[in-house]
Image (tube, rainbow over all chains, first blue to last red; front, side, top):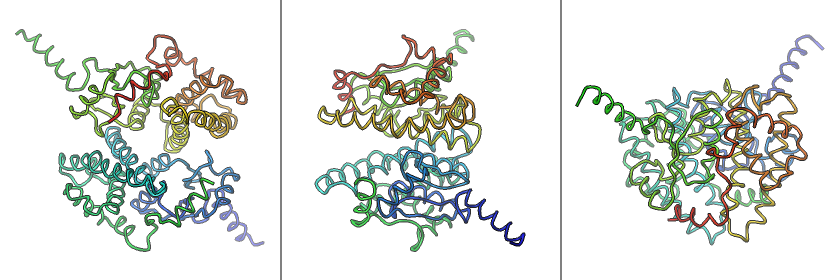
Length: 242
Length: 242
């Protein structure tokens, strides 16, 4: 082989060792929102292109487990910077720090963490709704909307009101803003008039939606996933619960 | 009043404004492990003295809520450095960063986060056990032990085996080590021989337990809480039930 071939082959092998041919982060999950959606939002907001490998049947998960690719045998898993990161918060923390979406000091991080953890709790409620049996859905919906409207959204309306700035923390875009926007859009899908009592959240949503990277992610054809329909729920049950 | 009195009073008022008379962190929770226990462990490991204010009846929780002290109407809440921090992970992240228990760079933090999040998942199973209805407890117990022995402990045994060092990450004490010790001891309470197949975890347990701050926390009379007994569950539920 020519010397150039050897160099090229060495480069390819190095990329493979680093995890992805392209060098882009690679997301392993099913083709739906679930626990990966927040990570897609953060990467998109940071302007980072990423690839996705979708689990479609149980064998896809088993293969990853047998490969030793999943530290605790679970997805989400993201190949990034030579690592196979698992655990939603570990991945989100890494991306946020790397792309400067985590505030400028310890105190800003504490605020961001508090806000984000509240949003994760609400996200859990919204996310589990889809996979509940039909007879549990009504009560769960009522609880979800009650928590959204009376526990979580008022907090963020008040934060924006108290400091009068565009972003939740430190007057710059952070993961708290991105995660709040994600939740606002999901809550609106369940209840279109959810902003009736939250004028500042309404303008927050408009402002954030205009940030170029986020605007791009909100357009059709992006890697943002739609709410899970019956077909996806069925697939999820087969992959993870059979 | 004498000038000295004014200075003293000003100092007292400043301390009150900062949140606690003594300047020590103040933990608000019921007198039991629950979601506050990892926080007690971490403060203790860092050698930080702390005070505790116990919720004993529903009115205690209601008062904190009405005060505006609880961002999302929930405990744990920790008064520290002039803030009222809520959300277990936000509090732990703050303490870990402040007391240098969070690794030295982004990659170490990613490892610590992955390990800690896995331990959180196992801790959820352990923590919820006593609050489950009696007819669900057997199955939960089996699931808890299965996950500990087959999903989580093997990972940490392998981590220690692969690098041969005393601590999980970066050859220095981090919140991952503290939390692993906490979880090992909790599982052992239910199954004393759980470490039979994990010789490196056995020596890890002995080694970390001997660190002076941790050794002190493990002694009777410390602020470490015992397991919640089934007969105590109704009183705890009364505080939190709507």
